[in-house]
Length: 315
Length: 255
Ligand SMILES: Cc1cc2nc3c(=O)[nH]c(=O)nc-3n(C[C@H](O)[C@H](O)[C@H](O)COP(=O)(O)OP(=O)(O)OC[C@H]3O[C@@H](n4cnc5c(N)ncnc54)[C@H](O)[C@@H]3O)c2cc1C
Ligand SMILES: Nc1ncnc2c1ncn2[C@@H]1O[C@H](COP(=O)(O)O)[C@@H](O)[C@H]1O
Image (cartoon, rainbow over all chains, first blue to last red; front, side):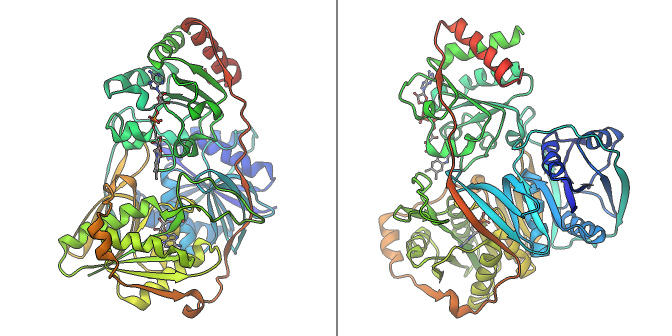
């Protein structure tokens, strides 16, 4: 039995749902799981972690708890050393992309990001390579091994435990070379694409910025779906870059991806091909996207999408 | 003032990737500069124009054919190129060491720019490893850079449109995101002018680096499988909408 550190990510004080599938990955292999939390841990968070197979909840209490990626990375390294943990799993989110490689650099440890599968005993990880066109298997060799898991790649399975709660009180030196000056919130309503369950996306077929409203309306009808866009829609200024799906945008992995007026270029497909279910709405029966989806409608998105939105709001 | 830009030689994003034996790919495809590195290079040239006597040096660790990527870098505005050649694939742990050594042997960096991710290995880590070896601060997904008073004030893009302003002491490592700028593609005169610029080639063996104790070794590579069999939904608009709702409810279970 090995000790596995799980870097848990919160958003506005609550547990991000995508953490749970990553816990499941570790549970399946029957190891001792340490959930490492850098922020205030509410009893609600503790209960959720206990439901999904956490053996230890490690609350990190720092002399200066505010966000600073360099200090936080140093704090995680210290926790791993204090608890003699040599495997760390995190999430390939914006925060994970800022912390895991820093931790790997400090420890000179191997790291694979965006893993869709890991084998902890064999120290192997599978991830996409060459813009999603291939899947590579890596063998990680080193004293400490780091995995950045792709959000939503593994479905969470309930596994109740009674975690042991401990605190790690750390005095991490002030970071002089890197300071966080301010954090500017995104536009209200901008959803986080990489962890969304449902994404409704629009491309050139939308024709202008005003028409994007019908994409937003449909996303709202789902409750909390996110809105995505092709690069053309972003380049035209109809949607912000934060919404771009694809190789040079965000790589997404929702349960459902609805592509409206998107032709299905290789660069777009590279960013959404691992989605659970893909639905395409396109007027062109020869569009490439139709070969990369589960269901397609050959038709005008301006009639099909509002009809779907209406049906969803009537549920 | 020396600005180093790490540029990776990667398969064209539109190229078909065919897996040969083992973990090798068919290399008779177009290779280009990694898209995010184009943003890094464009930014380096912009900073050069603001700072007196600045020099932009593009650095690449790759096979000898990567000279073409360095030539593009020179045409886009870099002053010189450094190519460290190898015949093998190397992980980010080794790559960072090689880039460090090559830069160290060349000069003293004030800023090192990289891309936030390479589109072939999708590693998202070389810049942080490089920064750690240099004991420099680092930031990723940088979309705005201002320099002054020995520091860089940068804006980084997080998720869902959230942005963060960081202040990094110089020298520092900054990894470019797509919103940093619009790459400046060279004109014909730029290309002609760049032919006179120097590319120094160094063989990996000559820089004498010990094998790192940790490794990320690729042991398998397969084409990504497409397991979908697309089905058409037909009917009147109303019935199509109803069928979609049924799929979303019963098959995808998202509503
Ligand atoms: C280095 C590089 C990186 C790139 N990265 C990305 C990336 O990250 N993401 C990305 O998306 N692209 C990326 N691209 C761009 C990509 O090659 C395509 O140009 C882009 O994806 C096309 O966008 P689109 O599908 O919206 O437009 P188009 O290809 O023009 O397709 C529009 C589609 O809308 C359909 N349509 C039109 N009207 C209607 C209607 N009324 N109802 C229904 N359907 C309709 C048309 O039939 C067509 O299929 C990249 C390109 C390069 C070179
Ligand atoms: N072999 C290389 N030569 C030059 N730069 C590289 C190389 N590998 C990675 N880089 C730089 O590091 C960034 C991140 O790469 P990666 O960690 O592979 O995602 C890239 O955008 C490049 O700027």
